[in-house]
Length: 187
Image (cartoon, rainbow, N blue to C red; front, side, top):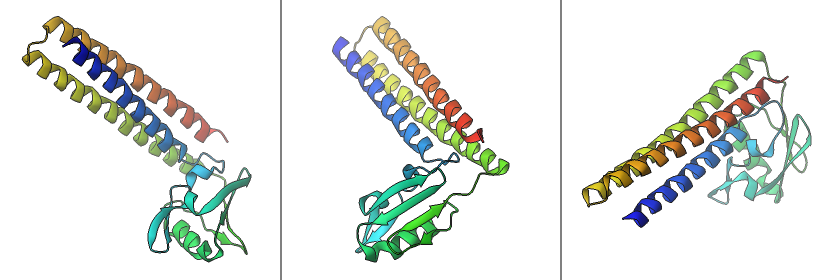
């Protein structure tokens, strides 16, 4: 039974680490005044009838802090890239050039910054919910072990460890949020 408890604990930590990484990746997509390729790399473009991430059909560079330059590897993809950006929720008008698409990012207004902070808070809250759901699932699995004859003290200790893990990962998500919030609000 001790091995099964350890398995559930290590599984919980691994899952919580993945939830933290996912939250971090989602927060990195929120624009904070500077151009970042991660803002557009997951946009889907129609590549010969197949929905493909933009990062798989083009180079995405940042020539300066407020500009993104997207150069498709095939010239005939310019229109598709342009269309994908227009249809996205970025709110940026693409400028089509001879060999690429340029995105000039406007300076953020105070209201837009507040909206981005709200978006970041919502993303971090969904990360916390993921971590709490992992805790709930692991605790249910531990209780099933209790019914199968595991020692009650061992299960209580394991539940305590799961709670400590949960608390640690929620603090890490809060740290990610506070860094992102200060990044967004810095002019």
